[in-house]
Image (cartoon, rainbow, N blue to C red):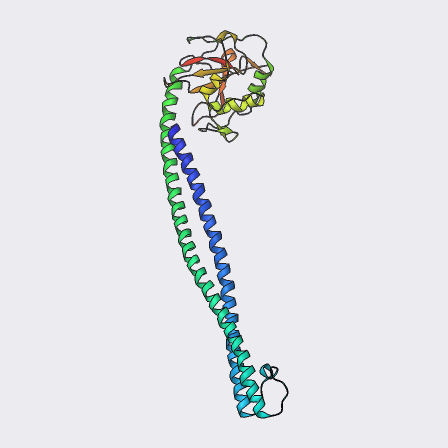
Length: 319
């Protein structure tokens, strides 16, 4: 189960990376498309200028040879001689040269812009391919994540059924330790940190059990203990086995509210933890008297008060 959850977390991290790659590809493609639009606009402007200058050149040539006059665009290039031959000579030496320079400049600009457009089109195709690849990878990641989640849910249902049977076999319905292999007794005056932890745990009554949960939306056994003791100013790991190592062992005859009871149901080490509440809470009797505990048991249940049971018990400890 731990490996499966780890695989799902890794798959989710990969999916997040794919989402980011897809988003970056979209941004790059949009930027290239904007650049391409600007370049196309410049090309159209240059092409329009080229057509206009061609028309001016043709008009001036016709006017010069047919009527002896020139248009305003070219006549400004000439001095003021009155001789027709001088005007024609100046036209050919100055006017034609100037328009030729403008023509070359426009053609050069158009060529540069065309090269830029070609480059941007190539980039756009490449970025479009990247976008499609990122989208495909993201969709595959989402599908893989769904398959992992489905596998996890099936595994959780199987373990929940097994855990339910274990709890049913281990639970002691009687009060005061009767019918079990161990009896509990309090160790005198309750300590403030333990009472604070119990009060915090009580706030989670009715919250559903969630694998790996550690919030009001859902908690697991060690998540409940971790959050409750955090309110008492004590930091514990989100692991029943680690919480046992982080606490000081106490005897069952010396329990105080807030102490923890650790269990090994699978035979491979500590895999469950509950919190001892005791016979009273806020001056009122608790549901199971001296045997009262509070726990997040297994999927399908909510945080609740339960009676102490002894089978599978590893020991008690105080954070």
